[in-house]
Image (tube, rainbow, N blue to C red):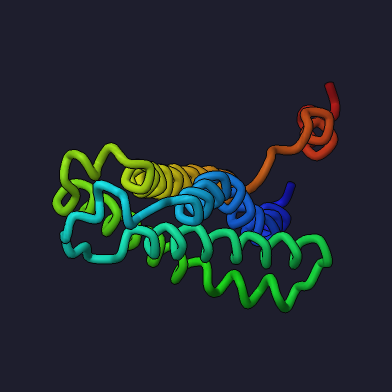
Length: 179
């Protein structure tokens, strides 16, 4: 591959990273929606009069709903090769990632500081904790992967691409071609 081909491949695969993140976080998002829809908050240990930063059931609906909706749009865009749709969604990825990270931090804060021990053992609280940890872990892993790929691309660019085959070097070097 030449340097231009390497850069083009990286640019073409930017959407693949978004799809990969969506696929990794999609199970937690679906589980959050299921737990939120099946929870009986009125009789829950979490309904003890505590004022939470965000209502617990709404937290799960927002966390799961936005991720499932965005993943659905992304998959539809990929399947139908809608470049305009994918390009406009690519601009939203950074904003959504910042939102997801902040939402996960809020979830961890609520679990640790606002929920009682009885509440922490409920399905709602455990799903908030699980979703928050999974989201932060996946985003941290993605950052590591991006750093790794940038370093690899930098090395390829610094080395000038792959070296020519040994037979090509003999033909080009007048001293070696006589041997």
